[in-house]
Amino acid sequence: MAAELLDVNHLTVRFGGLTAVNDVDFSIYPDEIVSLIGPNGAGKTTTFNAVTGFLRTHAGSIAFEGEELAHLKPHQIAEKGITRTFQITSLFPHLLVLENIRTGRHLQERVTLWDVLFNTRRKRRVEEETREKAEDILNFIGLVGKKETIAASLPYGEQRLLEIGVALAANPKLLLLDEPSAGLNDTETQGMKELIRRMRAKSITILLVEHDMKLVMGLSDRIIVLNFGKKIATGTPGEIKANPEVIKAYLGERKGDAKR
Amino acid sequence: MSRTRTGILLALGVALIYPILITDPYFLHMAILVGIYGLLAISLNLLLGYTGQLSLGHAAFFGVGAYLSSLLFLNLGISMWGGLVLALCGCGALGFFVAKLAFKLRGAYFVIMTIGIAEVLKLVALNWVDLTKGPMGLTDIAAPQISLGWVTIDFGQKVPYYYLVLFFISLSVILQHRLVNSSFGRAFVSIRENEDLAESVGIDCYKYLVTVVIISSSIAGIAGSLYAHYVSFIDPGVFAFFISVNAVMMAIGGGQGTQAGPILGAILFTLIPEWLRIFGDARMAVYALIVIFMVIFMPRGMLYYASQLLNLGKKSHGR
Image (cartoon, rainbow over all chains, first blue to last red; front, side, top):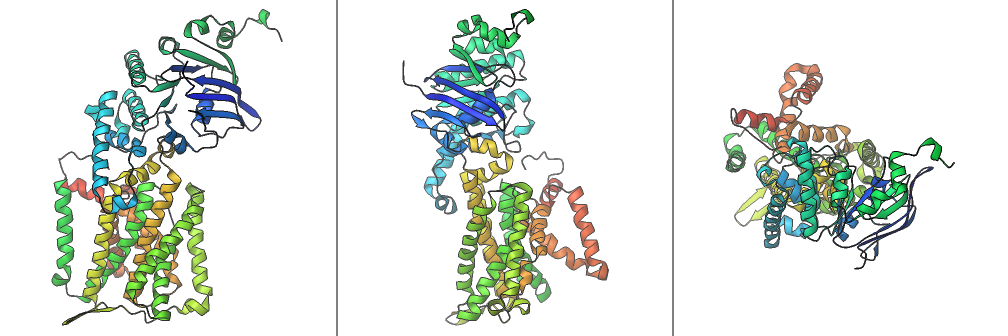
């Protein structure tokens, strides 16, 4: 197997006295689709926030391509090649769809203040490049017809697509999607599933937090299960479905089975 | 977009022939003040309109620009040209340090910090009597002359000074236009729109906030320097809270986050208090009522409502 893209070891995040993520280990390999599942409050989003630098970790390491991320800021982690979407739809709401994508391309635009103030040839070339690449991304996510629409006035399903577009614009190697299908109807969920597959085909590794089990089982190469901040299982969709620990976490246990 | 271009050229054309059409020194005086406060409003709008950070202490940079330039002239005999350069660099440097400190905070904390910085500088100007003459203020801050062989341009005269201010306004409008339509401008706006998302795609928000304050404070410094050499007298009143608030009203009332808004705001909020002189002692009360009315009924700024009027029946989009 290839070297890990992301290697998380003994990750621990606390909020005051509450340990939200407790000594969690997992690895993600290039070109995989991996899902992180678990009941509400299991620590899935907290893990996302720790990996992307939005939360400080209290112990453990997060290595991306062998580099430690734990003390980097979110924008530095994006620079290394990890981008994300958020659980609650998160866009630049008053900007046009096209502008949302162009903003997402920030890391690819290497211009100095000098270039901007003197409108150098390099600056104009970079602008042109960004415009073209933004069109490509809009084509890819299927919103090219809406590029002159204000982001906030898009229907909900399209806002979720645009979110992914913004994250894609930053040219990630690893993309973290936080409940991409939440609130989508069946057709839209199907579209999302295809989009995730097409991203993987472009060599973008995907880590997914998702509650829609049909989507998770149909899409994932591997699944990691968290419960109360601890990893309780990891394996292929088939293995996870058959795992008694996982079933217990999701459905609870009968009173008579309780050991404590 | 051609409509915008026509608008800009028209405005520039009017501004260029204004002193020829209107020779009354009072109206020329008002136009120069509009220009100086317009620079301050443009400077504040870069911060407030684009990155969404409210500063209620922008007079700090205006005042430092005014004092630096005046002291340089009075103590070392260096003309306004040197003063403008020093005001630009000095205020830029001050902006750098202030921003480094202030952007550890956001929201209400940031606002309070900006007020504090302006007040502290006002107290320095009031109490460092050896240097600033305290509340007595500095007098005889002259404007320079340029000799071009057979003609001498005296910037102590209103018409040359008008064109000087117009030059700086045009320069900052071009600068602002280039900034806004670049990855820098998009980074500024992304902070206003959604700071977390901006960070998540690799935008170093702190760095861009510091950058925008350096640019903004440099322009405010220029405005202060131009003000001092125009009125030829300054006192610690250049740090007044009222000046900061006025800049905010100009940016918001004209149209924050738009390129022409602050200039429109500067025209309105410089002229309205003048028109209100007919109300005598009640002038400022009426002024306050007008401000409240505008904020409630025209929250998007005059520019937006003016363009709506021009576009009657036509669908417009964008901010």
